[in-house]
Structures are given as C-alpha cells and as structure tokens.
Amino acid sequence: MAGLLTVLLLLISVYAFVAWGLDLVLHPSHLHSDPNAIFYNTFFTVLILVDVLLLVVSFRYLDDFGLILRNSGFIIATILLRQALGSEPWHGLAYDVTAGVLAVLMVLTQRGLNARRQSNHAGAA
Image (cartoon, rainbow, N blue to C red):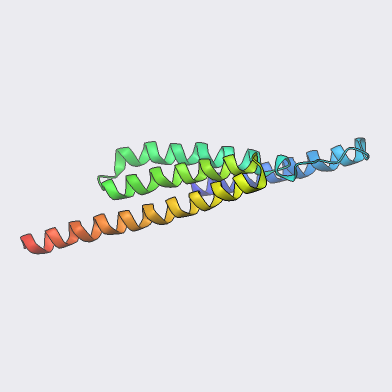
C-alpha cells in the first residue's frame, strides 16, 4: 500500500508540475493566486481517501481498539489540515494547531490504552 501511495504521489507531483508549467507558458500574465491549488489540495484529498481505506482495512485485521481510535483521529487531523488550505490565514492556523493537538492526543490515548491493557495482562498472570 505504501509503494502504491508513493507512485501515486509521484504521478500527482509530475501532473501538477506539468500543468503549472503549461499554465505559465500559455498564460504568462495569469499567475496562481493560491499556491495550494497547484499540488496540495489534490494531495490531501488523495491522502484522506487512502487514510479511510487503511482504516477500513484495519477494521478487518486489527483487534486493538487503541490503534483504530488513533487511526480515526489521524484521519480527522488530515481532514482539518486539508480544510486549512482553503481558509483564511488565521483560520488555517487554528485548523493546523487543532489537527496537531488532536494527533498528539490520539497517540497519547492509544499509548494509555495499551499501557492499561498490558498492566491488566500482567496482573492476570
């Protein structure tokens, strides 16, 4: 899955660079007012779709609630980062900070759940 995502990222990068170059050649007076429109909007959209796909696959193969909760939090954080690209700078900063705090909280929650489960297993033995 990671290999396919890498290839997809390279294809998106090449496509975005060629489209941007052609736009500069064909319309030299027209510059993009939003640099995020060149690459990042498409990249984050693909990243969100891949994250959701990985979450659905993890439901099948994982029985660890903490990992599934962490992965779900990462998807929400990625959606917040994608939303930040199209918003005003201060709103974007708020989205970015919220996404970072959420991701850290999800990792800490997952670690706490794992520590609790390990202590329960050690106490039972």
